[in-house]
Image 1 (cartoon, rainbow, N blue to C red):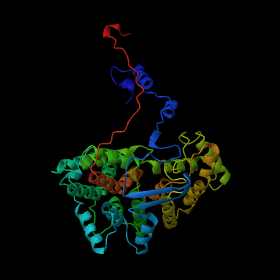
Image 2: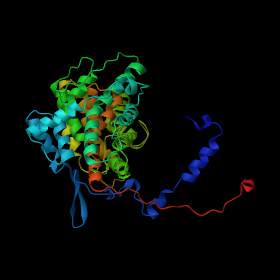
Image 3: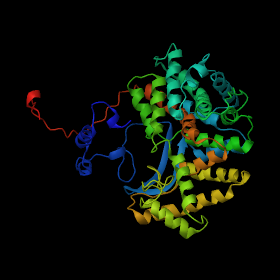
Image 4: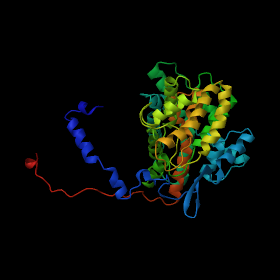
Length: 452
């Protein structure tokens, strides 16, 4: 809505708002403020302790941070070892890694089997919830529809505000179980009422894995290949946790620290994904790649692709932001381990879908972009592809609509949010209240009749 559409307000009021909210960039440096809660080299401000995950992006030698290949650990297990473990046995990994993040140990066969049953029992939504909540006034913004649905689920819970650990754990497991249905059904509602397509609501099959059920409930014929399901399962595992300092996880910690309930906490974390700088990176990559194919005559020509990428970096092409989406990460310098693992599986799926030419363009940009970025701007840390770079291509090959890209991230990351919420509660949460340096100067009150 434009300011001019709000009765009584004009551009003058907007200008006043901007004028009195603006802070000179030099003042941040003067007062030692770490914008984005990060140092210039990408290292975050220490805001807490966690036993859930660990990210390694540098090694320290003689007090100097030396960038290294990135590593990601879930409860002490390196992510590549976890993936190798369940893929070598041709098992799905989402449920196993969910158990690991929530409880801190890997389950044995019986524990994993029982945990899968618990998740499947939690699938059930309240009676008439689909038509009365999810399908009511559906929107293209699936995250918003999910947020509405999560808050509504709280009203069905007689222990909504009970923050005892046994109750919170049960609430978290229930939400982990329900997130796929909230996302997929929200999309079907939008597809039917917004796009005029046929509407079908498939129930999850308790015998299937999380990844299989997402594809099964999303597709009208419920069909999928095992490679499709296993690559989607891998994507869920790689997205489910990434340290306490990620924007959405930090939101989880902050809201939990206030004593708020599980439904409000997860809704807040989910809404933090709506911004393109957090949960929308994979779709921005897809838009950028489409723009490159449209504007480069020969996408196999290195010189032509390099020239256009340089325009993007200079802010002269695509969205004029100067960002090559999918490149760079706040933490990793040399490599994002999730992206390296992801790439190999996306490559296999590209071969199955006969999309090797498109995959080759991604590989070319992966090679060229870091060099061009380093040439065109001052870099304080290395630049490499992040997990968003190939995520969009995977979802495209799986024929997942772009409206579900961010919700899929949330379906995975709600596991990490749950683990961090529990950890915050277990360690006697104290409300988070960071300090801000005030630039306010005292003013003398002016009577109403004396104001100009």
